[in-house]
Amino acid sequence: MIIFEEDPDPVSGEEKYPWNFTWHGEHHQESDMAFYATDPKEKVIGPGIARAKYGGFMLTYPPKRVYDIWSDPLFSLAENKAERLLLAAIDYSLEKYVLYIAKKPPSTFAKNWAYRQGKKVIFLPIGSFSKNLLEKIRIFHVLEGAHVRKYAHKFINK
Image (cartoon, rainbow, N blue to C red; front, side):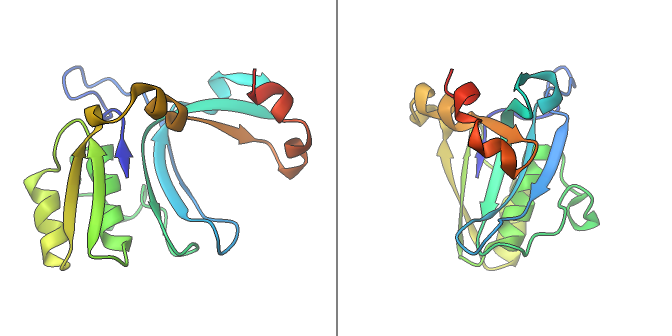
């Protein structure tokens, strides 16, 4: 999982990423995903095509297992959206290790959460990755339906 920015901002309390969503993989080769991001309706780039930016996301495999983490009371103990994603990643992971890429290490609470489940959070500072690579990962597009895939490339690649 990757946390690009905490939300709300720990200093100002401002929310920059209001879209909290859980997506299920469409088939067995895709992961389930939970994220917080900018509102895609604010950046429409073509007919039925919007651009958004992740504040943070987590992926888990196999698909079709994740409940809506944003309304799940199990994760309501989290201090912010980043910690909520991490708690969910730990809970849904079938593996012992959960990779956490962020500016700050995970909280003691999150590490204890993992420990109680027999898991361990591996922290990698986000600053150790290329800024260009991170920006490419961070931007995504939302399509109004499968039919938009036919022409989306004309707008996305600009």
